[in-house]
Length: 160
Image (tube, rainbow, N blue to C red; front, side, top):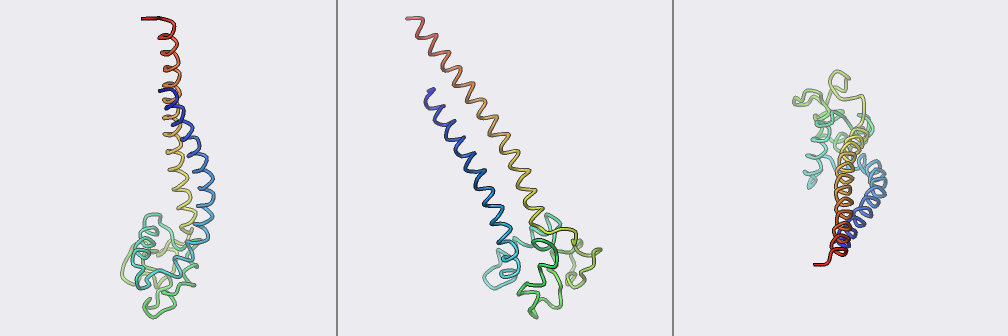
């Protein structure tokens, strides 16, 4: 039982280290790909899931664009006639109405910050919670290993 707990504990440590390493890589990938995804795939045929995800991201986090609202000037959709003169998608608007993205005034859209920083902050906050839960579970496992050793010692010293 002790060896089983020890193996699980070691696997959890390895998983924690790998998660930390890959978080750094994930952060870099997010920065590199979010703007490209927004500008190249938003409102494109066959990319409805991307459009839905970007709209939800901008509304939930109250942000516009990857770094800021000017990222949308490079958007294939904004440059097309489908955008109907919008400067940003309607999901950037503080109060969504049809064609509200035509006015890129600060009272109308989220100009303050882009979505990448807000998304990174969200992930970091939740990683702290996951880390705290992981440490708590590790403590319980350590106590389990200690009690297993104590039980083994007491059983070994007292013959039946």
